[in-house]
Image 1 (tube, rainbow, N blue to C red):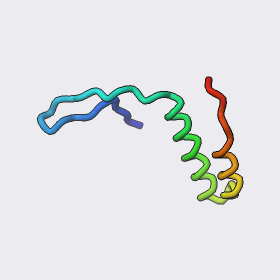
Image 2: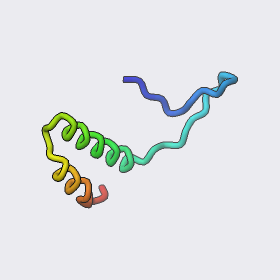
Image 3: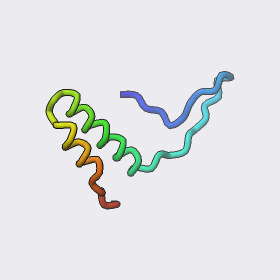
Image 4: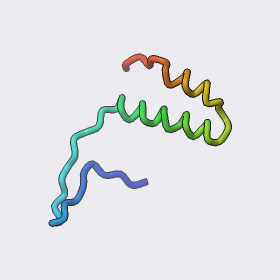
Length: 59
């Protein structure tokens, strides 16, 4: 896996992007994992919808 914390401009300069909050990354991963499970028929979509609605306590 390759990840960068910025992007290259057309002139070749690298611009650092602001940090993404961990909670936002975690929520995105959670939703992607649930979609993956539904797509692969390992989880019912109705259960996915209920799980997405659950409130996750802040860490």
